[in-house]
Amino acid sequence: MVPNLDDLGGRFPPVDNALSSPNGLLAWGGTLSPRTLLAAYARGIFPWFGQGEPILWWCPSPRAVIFPKQLHISRRFARDIRRYQWRAYLDRDFEGVMRQCAQPRPGQPETWITPEMMRAYGRLHESGHAHCLEVEINGVLAGGIYGVTLGQVFFGESMFSTQTNGSKLALKALCDTLVHSGYRLLDCQLPSPHLRRMGAVELALQDFRALLPQAHERQPKPLLLPEVDWAHSAQC
Image (tube, rainbow, N blue to C red; front, side, top):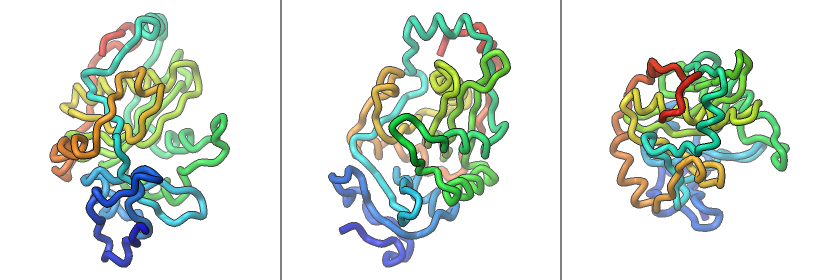
């Protein structure tokens, strides 16, 4: 039985206590205050729950991560990049990116990005701990991604695509930005075929946590868009 954070005084239990089924469930309850969220991410924990459910806290194993310098660009995607006229924008519309990520998807009619989550991550954005990136193709919104930053780690939360390759372009632009800004790790939380094709690897929980001292510096490194002509670049 997973513990209630309120019974623990808001302190998270050791992540080794997370269940194997469902994979990673660690605790429930508590709040989505900036303090609680930052304490969670520094330990590799994140909230994930549906509308009408209590707050659920997770730390699954294995953990999907991307080392930004090792993002994989396939030959076909590289060709697509070269023929697109595209641009990336950082922190232009955080709420808008979250709303796009919350849209229903095939096979996923409901979203875990509830109004409560939007308010919570909006507060993190206002404090400089949450960021978004959008990409446009030919001046039209194509995709985007948002997440939380601590130290040299970007904890990815969700991404969306409104055009072919939109989320791929957003992921490439994000990795370019992370490399340029001195970040060392992109946490993708859960593995997927799409992420594996883009270079994600799966780490055992103990190996993932060994990388988290990079996140313990509570003030994140600034995110800076690289000075690169993305419209004519297929380099990562």
